[in-house]
Image 1 (cartoon, rainbow, N blue to C red):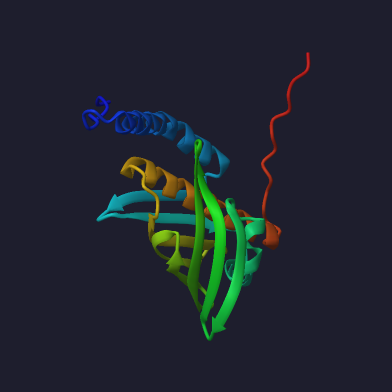
Image 2: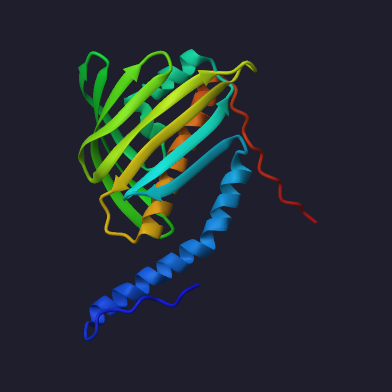
Length: 215
């Protein structure tokens, strides 16, 4: 790994800030394989990818669900119940409905390692039943957010759920840290949605923790 970038001369505060940001980047570099392994071990059917391009973090997530389309749709559009199963979401309130467009105010936080970024945002959700929900930022503490859930029935009887979107948080963080924060936040939210859909469908299989052996 490269050495830490130089700070402006005769600026102790800037030098301290650069050292801390570099340490954070190093911790992310070291923690990323562990985080990825833990996510894969939790549920092999869920895949989340993220890449940075032109100032935006583009995220793609997908999972195969054991659930009827009706249950998938009801869960995706149950906006005010989201805090019960979406990690980091403290509140979600519908403030307006205009045909297929639902305006939702949300608050919460995104976490990675010891970083906590507060979130307060107003979203417009455009419902395209029975399989697509499109979301875009109207205002709030996220610079840019647009994305969509799409559910597609499969020949196997399962449903392929996909999330595609682009995000730019309103946080003064280095690109490496920002990308990791967004990816893991979207991953947590997507996993929470998948697990809730399967729970409502009665097909969610709980992973049993290994019992400690007693000698």
